[in-house]
Image 1 (cartoon, one colour):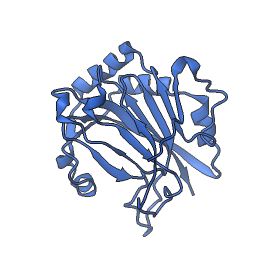
Image 2 (cartoon, rainbow, N blue to C red):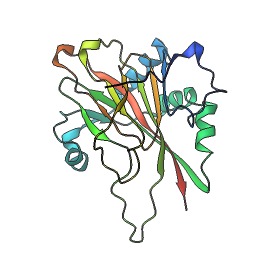
Image 3 (cartoon, helix red, strand yellow):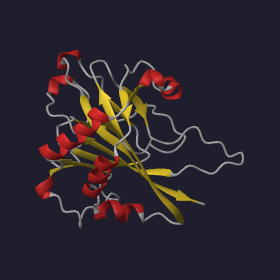
Image 4 (cartoon, rainbow, N blue to C red):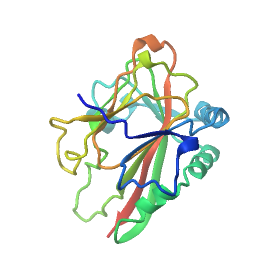
Length: 225
């Protein structure tokens, strides 16, 4: 199994003006979030109302045997902080490169993965759309994952696995995919990748004890006629 390193860089070495998602569809920036920012976001997580996987019937049906990870809504203050830090010109250039855009959307949530939790392989395309008199949903263009926990050891699992792009086309099945990135959820790191792209979250190992893999995740999206 071959894995490419891709764009896995430290924040101080990242040149936002030169980077292009058309050239490098997977970007990993380490030390993107400061300890103070992570703490502020975790404080927001402490106030949110969490919903477990088993409390979301449709999601639970699509992702069986994935433990019982939790999802929560972002409070306004933490959402403002999150989006201010994500005002990267490279994101804007990629989003505006698509033709006939009539709307721009974002959707981000808190996620908490404890021991036994995982996420099966998927490509982030919306599967539930029906063309019978309903408006097409926005297209997910860039997926975002920000890790805000305080500590994470390599033996604790929870890696984000990203697969090669040729099979990541709408309507295709995972099939025989090749791994291109195995990304440890390091505290303070930021992961962005273009969608559709097959990926999954490895199961969190019980050796993590009471530690949880905490993140904000979601998408930048565009809407078209």
